[in-house]
Length: 157
Image 1 (cartoon, helix red, strand yellow):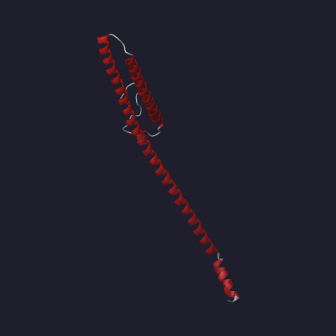
Image 2: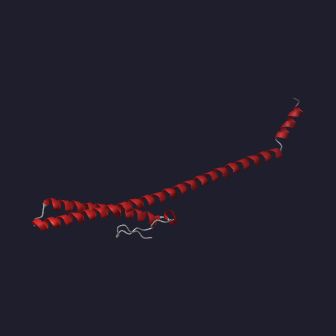
Image 3: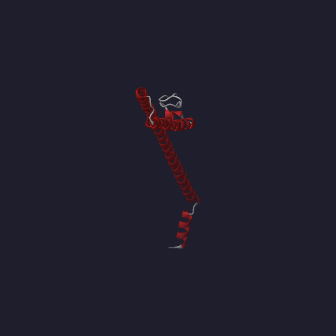
């Protein structure tokens, strides 16, 4: 290959227009890759945010059911104590004596009521605390934003 041909080839390859075109192509490629990465990250972030909202809503739904179950637990314990007290009153009216077993059972039932009430209070406080920290109340739309501690089975919005 003669020297003139080599110089012409080098001039063609190293021409400013050709270099400029390659630089523009490389910059465009970098910009496209950056935009693609940014869009992908944004999509993943939005997807994780939707998952978090779904998880939060599911937690509130489940917690509401657990609280309703604790309401029933409190009522059942109270009913058991009332039945026991009625039986004790009936027996003591007939015999005029108080039995140790009756006192032990009354203490046990009172403790069961107290334990059930403590569990309910902890559940309701956790629910209310999380609900009050929500920036977006639409997560729990249709569910109570606050549950009243003083009334079994009640919730207010």
